[in-house]
Length: 379
View 1 (cartoon, helix red, strand yellow):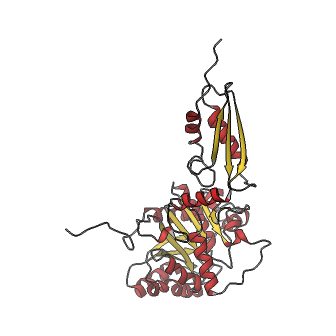
View 2: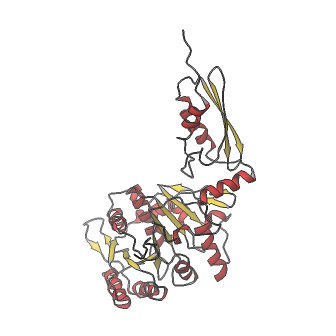
View 3: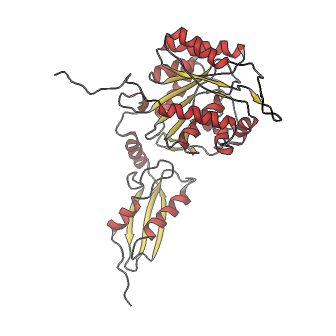
């Protein structure tokens, strides 16, 4: 009876290169997480893995993935995974790797070479469903195969963690935040760093710094689309967003109600002041389907979305499209409370269909050339 030859250290390392960190989504060999590999004569392989934090919530998954990848090699009779924690120097090296050599506190999305499309979801007033729309659009875009991130820029009224069912805080590597992920969407929110639902008492400069940190101190990876859930109105965060992300396009949420339409026009008209592009208008709560006959009941009126789009087109001197109208559905609210968006919970619901149609329009849009280097030289 012949015994298979144990694998080489090089073969084990190659197998480990197929294991990705569950949060960062890059091979653990590239991230400096593999401290060493030992192969005994009887085929037992010991892999020493460095975690970013001692209490890493995904350490069991990493252990299982390493065991499966190495255990599949010929000649392996057993796998032993030894976990340890990175030193401060190793964490600093990992941060440098994640930043790709960029200086600290630099917003990658604002760089000329960025291909990420950014949409700032705004409203003139609260209560129009801006956050629930943002959540469902993000998940619908992820369902379309895009890599999506969401910044909960509503510092005072943050709600993204609950709406996406996220209960664990993000990992932090040498000051760099690794955002948690739900339904294929990476999310960061000020609410993830506050205990016991305490209030934040921030004024203008502090709000600007908080938004800058959420954008610059987070490892987002390569995103196709970044959505920002802005607070209602045209205050500090709306202005800071325009300053930090000048190529971000605005999407205005309104309801058919006249009072909502008027303030939505104010929220959209800020684009003329900040020199931002207005991607379009979404009309939320656009009627309630009667549960008995199916006829649409105009609870908040009708035609508000197209009225806002036409008004903003006149104000800005360019066509502002109505991206879509989303009917009232109690399951949208329920999904926000339970952390299960309606595009996942009931994809065939009228509201879910409308939200996915809007997401498809955003997916089809291409980023303009503003702020991007064309790499041209005179001849």
